[in-house]
Image (cartoon, rainbow, N blue to C red; front, side, top):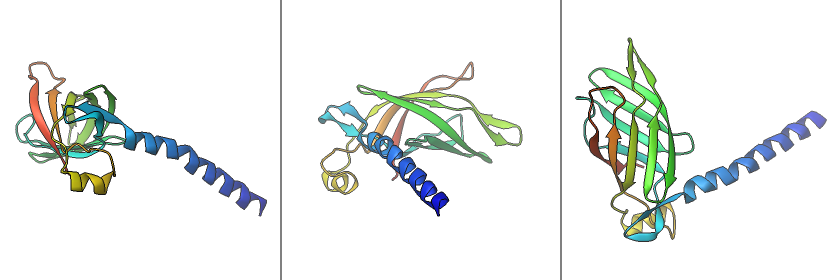
Length: 157
C-alpha cells in the first residue's frame, strides 16, 4: 500500500511539473503586423512547395518538434529543434535516416508569421489569442551546392 501511495505521489509530481511546459508552449508567440501582442504559432504545418525535387514536408512546432518527408519512394520521420525570438522562428532539422542508405540532411529554416486564422476558428483553438495560419520561411539546405529556397507552410491542425 505504501508503494502505491509513493507511485501515485511521483506520478502527480510528474504531471504537475509538465503543466508549465505545456502552458509555455501554447503561450509562445511571435510578433506579426496584424497582432502587435503576438500570435500563437505552435502546431503542425504542410510546406506548399517541393524540396530537393519530389519531396513534400510537414512539420510540427511543439514541445517535441517533428517533421516528415514523403516523395520519390522516400519516407523520413525526424525530430527538429526550434526557438522563437521577436518575429523569427528558427528551426533546425536533425539529420534523420530514411532507410535504404538514404538520410535527410540537418537543414535549417527561418520563419515569420503570415496570415492569421479567421477569428471564429482562432477562438475555437485558443480563445482570445490570434493564431497563425501560415508561415513564410527561408529553407536553408545543408548540402553544399544547394541554394536557399523561400517556402510557405500552411497550418494543418
